[in-house]
Length: 436
Image 1: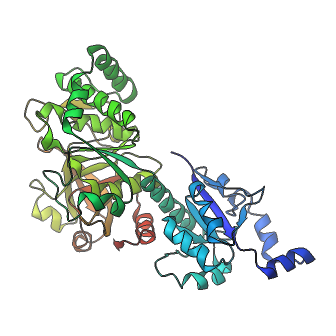
Image 2: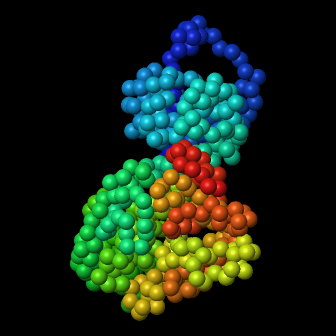
Image 3: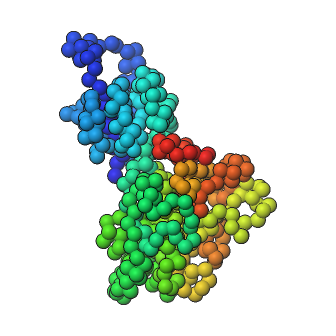
């Protein structure tokens, strides 16, 4: 993934110019303390050494840009993923940040605290739609930076959707004209016939080469006819996503003329390669999926249905939920994944393996895109359910009533790691309702 690009700004106040011209500097007793931090220095000059996925834009060798007008700010937007206001700027600049859909932080000190930015915060209170989280040390700063990283992934997404929206299985109150703007990423629609054609043109030699690659990279057992179907679907997806220059893919599976075109196992592979997917053209589900993919630095996630027919009520009462579906990233399992059929049909392809992932975050988005929920837990059991293939049993960290009362959305996203605070921060930055 590309680095999170920070742009720090201040205004060119007359008082600031006077202090600079006179060479006036107020000494701080904290300066000597900061000098002793070494590699733990979280200042803008050193933040890229602490988090190697962060970079700070430079203005003629300086880490802070002078921004006096809206036009000054607008010129910086293409190179910026996160704005940091280190000294108060005028209203037109703040309005430009708000309109840019970029997150904003108040400036912080070498310890990651922002208490010296109270004047900036006072001005930002005039813009309640601009959420600015408080920073009280490295953990808070890291949460905010990871949240901004997730928003970067979402904003830079271009999705290829095979067939239509809403799909045959996922309903939404958002029409196709508004969904791209509401969800915050570009969507390209193609007919299912284009996807079928891309499948049918794949050669035996290319399929054989792809299978060898899956075996070498992931240790997947490819000695089954279902593996050939997986490779054909995979090559078609790679061809189409390359042709349309996208970094995200979804398909309305009901539009396929045959189960052999349902790319469950192929999506398992491309997810681990960084091409985020959504099953059944569930476009809203991409919001938490993309956010957590970005936050985690590109980890693969699992999309599924919550508490379908296989989890017992007694298990739910004891803080254990079930999520099941058919796209399982091979890196979740280590080597030895098998390529099986789709829902016991004898056709198609799904991946099955011994899941090693433990700590996870479960998240979904409301069908209108206006709210995001999340809870955390631990994977305590994995079962081959055939229909759907992979079932995850997750012990929730939160009381079950709290976890389930906030659930929204059709499909849920399961991502390795604990991302609750980051999702809450990103959701507020996006002016959506956090249900956590």
